[in-house]
Image (cartoon, rainbow, N blue to C red; front, side, top):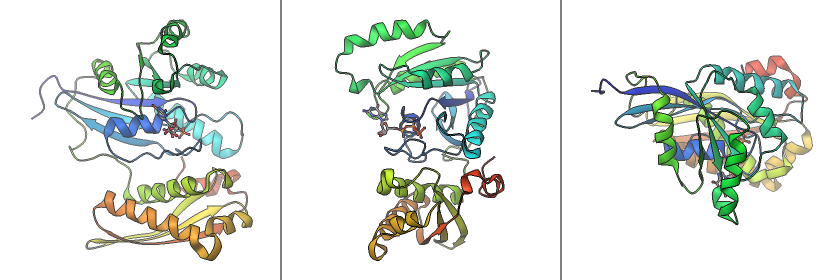
Length: 296
Ligand SMILES: Nc1nc2c(ncn2[C@@H]2O[C@H](COP(=O)(O)OP(=O)(O)OP(=O)(O)O)[C@@H](O)[C@H]2O)c(=O)[nH]1
């Protein structure tokens, strides 16, 4: 039974691409749901990760990085999703890198609502050569915005994450938990399967493949302890198709094998996975295609 003072609320994690939002979410909820890679802009959908302890339930809304360089429909939709998800939360974690506050960070900060508590999370402190640089940076950041709190962390190393959780807790409204103990994501398995493939794609391809490549699940069936999944990687150009497939299909085989192994762990079942690669010209600017792929 939840205590009468149990707290439950929504927490948004925002910040420009590559500051470590996905890493932070993963470490906070101790589960591999959101996707991280060296490539910016891998998180495209809103993902809810949930952390429940004895006193509270934190429902995290992971948001895509803001895009300022490109102006395709996809980026506009992504920015809209960010703003939308911020409106629905109780508290915002604004993530930046130690000790950097650039124009892109400023742009993100400007979009945050003034009527919501914002905690400044200064990530990657493990990378700091001189820890003495931190205090003056914190002082200068305190002048930029009326933050509810400022905390240096390392998401990757798990430094100060308990302290961050304790800082967030008082801002959640008193309420019983909204999700069951073992629910870690409200995203469907279908979506998570696509994310697994996409992560492998970006990890293996790096800069060779544009971030606008995407994964579509054509068929997802559960047959006893087997999930049968047919997926399709959509690329923009035929030369990219050849790159993804690789010589004798080797690259694609690695992507599919690694994705299948991750899925088997996540779903706790056997997975039969087939992955195809298709060229979809100019899909990033085709609003109807975006909608059919599940972008809001
Ligand atoms: N050294 C160090 N690296 C980190 C830390 N947190 C994240 N990183 C790295 O920073 C890179 C970007 O991390 P992500 O979690 O993908 O960043 P993101 O903000 O979610 O990026 P987008 O999805 O593009 O918006 C990855 O290579 C992470 O391993 C940290 O605390 N220390």
